[in-house]
Length: 251
Ligand code: 13P
Image 1 (tube, rainbow, N blue to C red):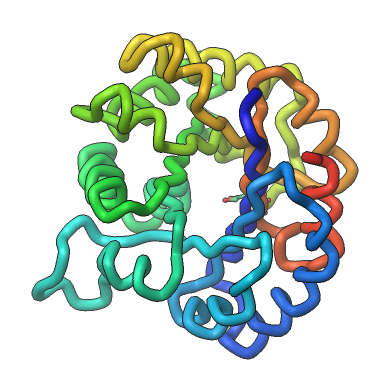
Image 2: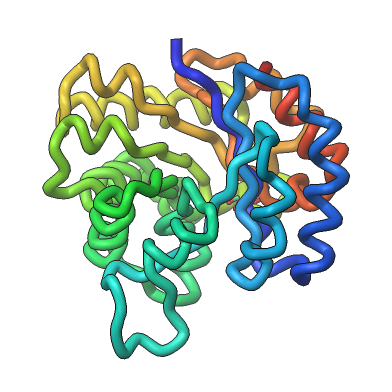
């Protein structure tokens, strides 16, 4: 049985003070949850403010991106070690907004996945098709490219350490959720791809989150599907009660 994982991707929202206030509200709402991994991913500038508020709680810290190099002349970037030493355990990589607006490629994302694993961070690798690609019948081709490209060169054991987030781009921030059956079909497909690049035992252990307009009203039904092991939540993660309700739906 895979342990579910619900993560909040706060994107470019919340100052350090606002972020600390949000986790302050969230803490008591999820403190009784013991069988779900709960993660918050504030912007870089709020990590140091949020980390101390999470000590001794069941909420873990994640970041939204990182660079693959350890250090050096990469203005504006941060390294895995910088995140780790701030208390991060997770890092979101290859989010569709980074692919779309910052032109991140599968090969760059692959370098990041490898650097995160080498540092001891758990990558949350985001994959997913655009509306145009879906309508063109390209969903499986694109998702396979994202998964195999992002995980290229990883040993089966390393594949087993990654969390995948299936986020159909057309469902992100649009209010349009993939139906549970649509999402399940792609999740099962992803698990099959994982089988091909590792083995069945490992593929069965990898958590695959759904992301894209997940909210308290649809979370339970989505996570009720056999290959949907949690959620990567955008908008609904910015309100403590909504995010907590989604976490409770995963219990
Ligand atoms: P929304 O939940 O706002 O659709 O965002 C999903 C997402 O992109 C999480 O990474």
